[in-house]
Image (cartoon, rainbow, N blue to C red):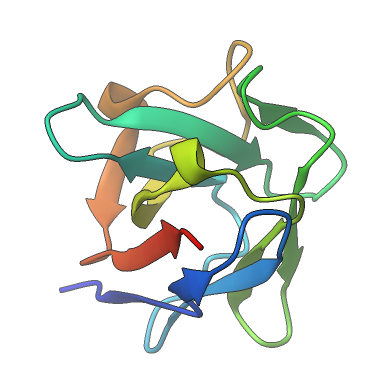
Length: 127
């Protein structure tokens, strides 16, 4: 059973930064796209960003474009989400997920395209 582990969440002030990590062991992420999603209390899960297996194509939700950057490190079997200029509306549980395919589709990731999910890490943006 594939197990994804997110880390790096926490409490940050508006305008601050966090870097989330997503890793796994015993399973190579090399040939799959990786996505980041988030879910705020009382809201549906939202696709945030995707990176393809070659790391040469990405997509971002409009709400995070220009502030968030997705990346991956294949030797470390890890994906990252660098989040800058954080806003209170970015507060949510953030999840990473492994896609069923190697590429990213559309303008932002869609849950149905992802097969494996982590447990999530809480990000809170507040004074």
